[in-house]
Length: 260
Ligand code: HEM
Image 1 (tube, rainbow, N blue to C red):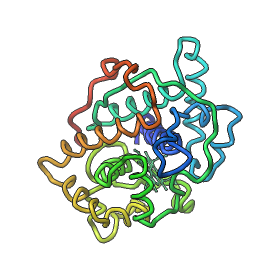
Image 2 (image 1 turned 135 degrees about the vertical axis):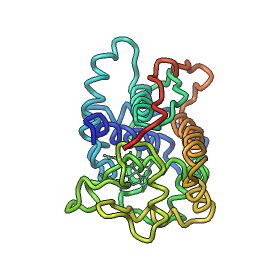
Image 3 (image 1 turned 180 degrees about the horizontal axis):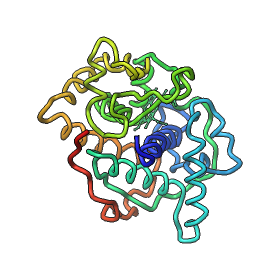
């Protein structure tokens, strides 16, 4: 895997974690939506980074803090930075989509209550689906978002297998994650999360997992659905959507082909 790819995956996970916990303090109440709380996760003295569900994000957080301290004088905020990092990481992965990149979120510095994103070993599909549904992410959206595990590795679930990828091509934004989830056992050297296995079988999700394996259309359909679900995720808790600026044009071009 390239040095670049080793940063992309933690960045992609950081953004999901930031917005997973940024949303509100009560799963089912949309009225309590908070603005993006990336500031707190990035806050040097914050305890949020110590939480077990954030294991593995310490390195990329340090990088983000360095960037923030360099550019905050130019009006760059933490929530925007984290989203921008995600969108650059995604588009610089071979086959990764170029996502709508909206900038101008207001940071907040309140910590969230613990326990608002799935613990690393959560595996009850109904619970996990509800968790996302309460944030307006449908099962179909969750099916698409989980495809980010195509660039993922695990370090903490089974430390004796630290570094194992969640699909056989971890530097590439391809649909092998979905193809390999359809096998009875993962390929040798590939780690299968219990949560992925459980969710992939769930109603409303299994058909999406299957659709994304289609040889002809799977990649295009998945990229489109990931993009839609991700833009939604990236705007959770943002209460000034109409004032955001579309900065998509500053992203590099997508790498639309890849051969091993
Ligand atoms: C049901 C929801 C989810 C669960 C339970 C889950 C769980 C996990 C776990 C256990 C790991 C491995 C952590 C480690 O041991 O180092 C991981 C890695 C990762 N996850 Fe998820 N995840 C979920 C959803 C998502 C979503 C929605 C995204 C992005 C949109 C995402 C992106 C990633 C990435 C990029 C990594 C790799 C990080 C690295 O390689 O360092 N995950 N996830």
